[in-house]
Each structure stands twice: as C-alpha cells, then as structure tokens.
Image 1 (cartoon, rainbow, N blue to C red):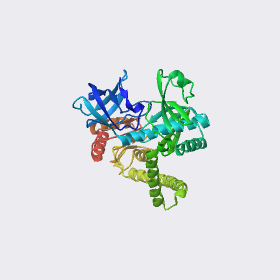
Image 2: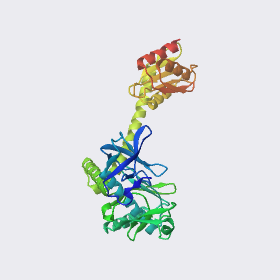
Image 3: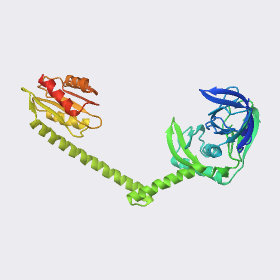
Image 4: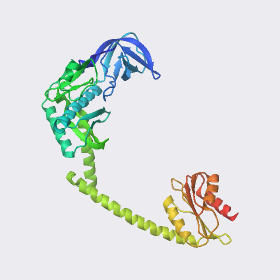
Length: 394
C-alpha cells in the first residue's frame, strides 16, 4: 500500500520516494512508489501531474489493492526518485475543492439542499443538488459561502473512526469504514473527504456561481473559485467590452440592444422569405416558358444557381401544377441538391429518373413517382442535366 503524503500535507510540492514496482497501464509505462504526494483521480477531483526524477507523470490513479499507480512517459532510471508536483494545477484543484465544501455547506445549511455529487473539470466545477432552487436562493447561498471565504476561517484535517465520525455531525454520511479523513471548515462544515484542500478559506479567494440548470429533478450548479473566478471575470469583461463597442451602447443597455437586434433579424428573415417566394414564382414561370418539347412532354432541365433543396422543390412544384411538364432542377450549392418532378398527367416516374441519375452521377435520395429529391451529386450539374434529357428522350 502506498503512503499518501497529501493526506496530511496538501501543500507538499516535492518529496523523495522509492520505486517498488515497474509495470504498464494500457500500453504506457507506470510505476508504484512506496510514498507519494501525487493525488490520484478520486471523489470528483482529477489527478495531479508533475515529474518523477525528471520524467513526466501524465496520469495517477488508485489500484484496487491500495497502491497508487503513476503513469509516466518513460520509466525513470534507478530506484530512488524525487517527485515534483505541478503546483499551479494542484493549487487550482485545492481552491475549487475547498470552495465546493463551503458552497455545498451553504446550500445545505441555509436552504436544506443536499449535494448529491461533485465534479471538478479543467475549466469549471459543478455540484448537483437534490432539489431545484430559485435564482434568489442560489444567490443567497453564494453570498453566505463567500462570507465564510472572506472570514478566512481555518480548514483543518482530522482523522476519526467511522463510529466516531458518525457522532460528529458530518454534513453527509460516509459509507466508508475504518479511519476516515475529515475536512473541518471551522464552525461551518465537517465532511469526510480524501481530496486536497487549502489551509484557510481565504485562499479560496472567491466563489462565483456561473450557471445553473435543472438536472434529474434537482439543480446542477456550475461555479468558479479563486484563479478560475478571476479568469472568468476577465473573459466576461472582454466579451462585454467588445459587445458594447460593436453595438455602441452602455453595458447596462446590452440586453435591450440584443432584443432589438433579434427583432430586426426576425423581420428581415420574414422579408427575405417573402422575396424568395416571389423570386421562386418568377423563376418557375420563366423556366416554364423555356421548356424543351419532347413529343408532348415539356422538359425543364435547369441549373438554378446557388439554390438550396427547398428552393428547388418550390420552383419544381409550381411548374408541375401545369399540365404536361417534367422537371429536373439541380444546383452547385455545397450539398449539390437535385429535385425531379412531373405533372399529374405525365406518366414519367420522377423517383426512377432520380435513381438513374444517382447511379450514374453519385449522391443519394428518393421520393415518389410525382416528386423525388436528393443531394451529394459528384458530377458537374451540366452532365447530370444532360443525362436527364437523354433519359427522357429515350
């Protein structure tokens, strides 16, 4: 079993150890040490990285027998090694994890909302609460949590048996047996936890709730602590500054300006659709007049510049409302759409024509005898239309 130095001293950045096993994990080199300050992925907190005798540590995890496995980019030389923790990553995790304890305790103490799970990601952390809360309730818990942060309360590490811990009023009952490691935020929270934490709440810096969403009947709360909160503020500040410059408004006027732009965009979309419909009618009437007479069937085979599938279908449908028409429309737009249609009095099978064209010129699609559509043509549109003309003439 590996001695876990971070249990008693999470601020330990360097340590000496001895390699007791050299092995592999999923094809990568790995070592087991007699003692380690590297935290393995556990309890919602990611693993530490760093070096062992100058060799990069890329992953750390718990083995089933209590050993801590260190995945490395190559096996270190010798048995005695010096380990160095990536302190920037470790301290970030300490801030987030301790902040989670304080925030979860605030939700539990003041709102009776129990934390069901915790996840610490690379950019933000989340806690899942057992019940939904209002925005005002979330703000209240956030304020209470920050009050504890700014009071700079001590955060102590204590050890107790499972029986002793059960009598201490843990925020959440622990299912572990034997000796438990307890994190004690003075007069505010006591929780069983094996993670790394700061020594005083002031080191958390700030707890900022950045988002909430309903999740599995409860509430998922996304939050940022310390350095992440500062980075989040900077990103928000820069986004707001860019937006107010682009819209020529004050920051407080941004919501109204965005709503105004959304309304204008909706109206422009409506106008554009009306113009598109009118253009489709004009195109349909113009193409009808230019149809090629194939012995009683008037063929419209046309490349409609940059038209999408919906536009092709609209034009074709208008043309075949008249008697005696067969229509093949295609476009060189990115999706390379094609539509085949025929009037109700024409015996030609539009779907059969499309299948024949797809077989020769690539793509896919299908439909009914009176109208079929597809896309993904691999040949030039002119070649596709020529094939359609040859098919109908035959």
